[in-house]
Image (cartoon, rainbow over all chains, first blue to last red; front, side, top):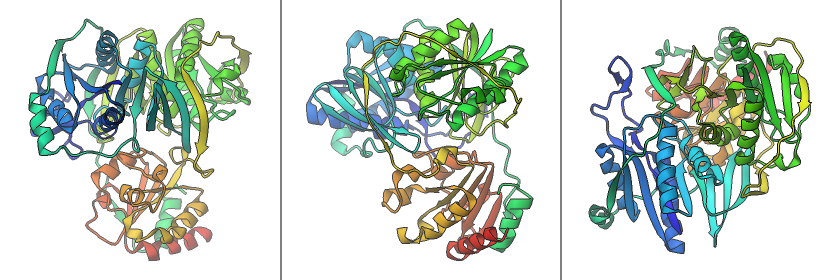
Length: 244
Length: 313
């Protein structure tokens, strides 16, 4: 089983969100970057579990610059076998998806796993785009994946419950909570990660389809109105907030 | 030129989010002076109702093979309808279905996509929440065909009072590799992402046996119930109720949180709510900073009194 896991670099969940260059760029100063949690906790760890149970290999792919290398090493420390970084400045999801799809088509994988979204742009786009570009099935928001030979039984989230689908390899999924439990790399994994192969390949020519014009911060809440009693609260919700 | 809207009918009827998408597409078409045309896949009835939101025509692909969810097939149908109607903008709801289909369609048509739009575009620039609700981005779509998925509950509904004409639309459906084996609905309760009011509770409730008052308050308000991550992780409440960074992101009109401290990861899932009420014994709980109304007090005393007060309204 040849498994490809797409990982993205994201600011730590507690990072201060600020912008520079006339509010057109995310201010990376002092920000700790991590493997996007959905990519790491769910897609990568499930990929490694499937490899451990069925044999094969787990390759991680990242589209980015050399500043992605620390998070790629983290993925290798958790247990991926090798990594490829496609050298490019990430612009939009479709551009990134084209890079990953081209690489995946060229090298042939049985499944491509990604997280359900990144915690920075919250796009939820790359997985589905990769699937379309490869012309293979895509199961979004998967919370469980069991493999039996070349057939996967996958649970995916739907409104108010889950849907169970069956799909043959090759396919793409986006992984959500429930897929696997987070793993903390141990010292042996961290040491081993240093010598695992991280190949850097050039990007292929691809157009972009979106441009970020600017960022804004949400207006500060005008402040919490403290009330003393439940009766007073209910009256305010009815008459002032008009919410009930 | 037209605006094409994919309106989901997962259970044989249009979903609430289908009307959200129709409302967005209808307003967009009106502003652009073009037609708003909806496309529906699979068994569905009551489609003329989409006219209420400015949809003039509904293309219904009533093929039963589309009753089971398959984003590959739906993307094919929407692409065919887009070509047929010369659509330059295609609208989805940013829900389970939209998240599965819109990216495929974007790659298929090589058309720029912005997911989770919270306002109508200005020119080709679409506003959406980023960094899990901690900021907004304005993103320009630079391709001729544009795809936008709208975050439910973002745009006020504008009813135009019209009625849509429904036409059968025949599309040859490609065979794909997905088979739906089973659909397990975990509850028949009001769906969390569609609820206008959500009552949520956390570890401050001390144990699963104390959720009766949360459920009763929700019932009185016609609300859905939710919970914080620790509560779902220790099994007091089912996982599908977990809202926050790794659970569901919701944006109801009213979010009432009892016994939840408001960690940044929890806020990331609820900060789009219009009105936030926090009930917590700890006056230093970070959640109060994000709240509109707060009671520093014990949920065990406040919730029963709220239920009483609502009954007396």
